[in-house]
Length: 115
Image (cartoon, rainbow, N blue to C red):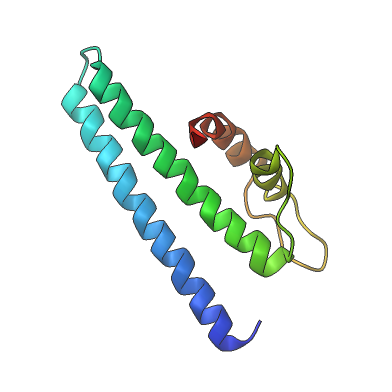
């Protein structure tokens, strides 16, 4: 990658991380408002939407890495899971692992919020 491409790549990822921080704050605020009571159907729907946005934000970053660094995005019906798992692997002479195995395991349940 050329220097200007790396700069643009970095800006895109930083923007995605900034968006994720906003989503996390919204989730935290919603959980505070719910407190110890049972969430209403509307609150569950809102939290589900936030979780969907959260995972999609992470997946966008991982997909960008796969496109720009690996030069290969998984395809097929299970591409979302394959992408997540691939980022838990080192690709020799290309890139180090992106996610620790514990992080991959922690993120796998969020695949269900993809829609």
